[in-house]
Amino acid sequence: MSTTYRLGVLEGDGIGAEIVPSSVEIATAAARATGVSVDWVPLPLGATAIASHGTPVPEETKEALAGLDGWFLGPHDSVSYPEPHKSALNPSGTLRKHFQLFANIRPAKSFPGAKAVCDSADLVIVRENTEGFYADRNTYAGTGEFMPTRDTAIMMGIITREATERVARVAFDLARSRRKKVTIVHKANVLKLTTGLFRTVCQEVAEEYPDVAVDDFHIDAMTVHLVRRAQDFDVIVTENMFGDILSDLAGEISGSLGTAPSINASATTAMAQASHGSAPDIAGQNAANPVAMILSGAMLLEWLGAKHGDEALGAAAQLMQTAVADTIAAGTSTRDLGGSASTTEFTAAAVKTIGATGQS
Image (cartoon, rainbow, N blue to C red; front, side, top):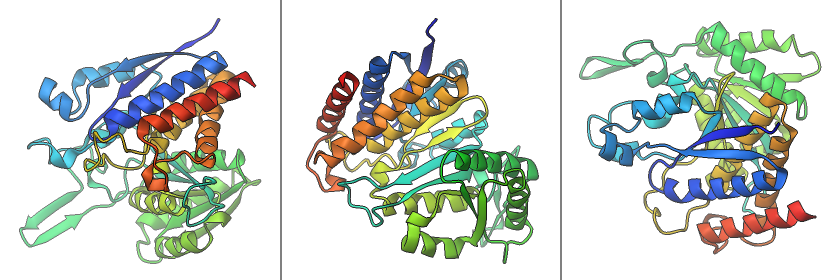
């Protein structure tokens, strides 16, 4: 018997209304070509949810997501929300925290035909997603930032063995399916107790994976290494804030943030989310690059395929990835990659490529 996968669709704000439908259209074409059944479930989130429900992340959305296999999350523009929503935890952080999506997995791979700083980059950053130096995910109650006086601000950074072990295992398991190398990024020469613990625990986990090579770098040195020799890295594992910074850098090195996908995963569920923002300056112009969102969707299908042992899902994910790469290589791309295609034109070209590939 075939399985129907139920996936949420949360368009979010700004260009989300353009790139999320694009990714759904391409995922639908790939699923159809490989015999996968998908039931798409649209749910309110972001500015439209504030207007309709009085909050950017309605309780009904969280309740519905809990019953789904995963979901596509569009970008949010929380800085433009009215108060008190503007000052509250943003929609992405809310969902990551609510569902304990502890691993943020962000590949950076160069595309032929795209304007990459490094034409041969093919790495993945695995970012711990629940603690570190991000105040909105640090504590059970309240936040990790506070001001004892109006002239003094204090930030807490929290690293735990449990959270580090689970994200390290994600990184090492991923490396086993790739080139079998993990790089640990930290700042243990200065932040000796916090990132020192992160490094130590990752090294202890590494002993369980004798077939995987391991090295480590300080965060400041790692930025230099990425710029100079991104092609030498396979899987990079690091804490929350360092991972956020490095993944944006890696995305630009490999071509553009417009091509930088990610998923946020727990042991039981996952959320596809492009690494870039909502780009309100081009929203509604049919000019946004949908590649990052498309590839994020492909990552989600791949993750689900591995979880359920469903080879057809993996094949659908591969079709999506190949369609994107072939479409760009054939000269169809959006403005940020040096092309002139609109969002819908790129989508149509990729869907056509899937159709041709599926029939070959």
